[in-house]
Length: 173
Ligand code: ZN
Image (cartoon, rainbow, N blue to C red):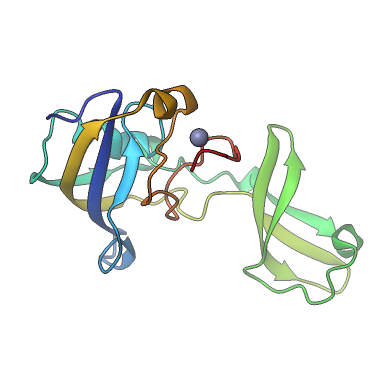
């Protein structure tokens, strides 16, 4: 069976940045399963896998525009420390959900000052050129429910670089 819209695809992958450092890998874990053609994974990788079959090895380099986008310096902001209310120990690397112009976004604390805290709303991989080494381990038909929900209902989803389908809570998992 070939990878096409409406198929559930399971992959093993290793993701490296431009410098060759491993950013993420499925090695030692279950393969990642996603619903093809739904934007569950970044566009550049999804396009590269189209038409492949189980057993295929696919190497693809994804530019930021087909990955997590370019970095936008406007998403780096200073907010008053009081905005964090109860959080006693703010530290770089902590993540918060914040209300932004395009709805809810995740921001990461990058610097903690006396009065002000710097937060960055860019995806951690924004601006990165991403090199994926992928092995397709399985291709199957999606269930009607998976197609209706737009994502996979078996184990294997939810790794860091997977684009979440709107944060929907799924009773059917
Ligand atoms: Zn669901």
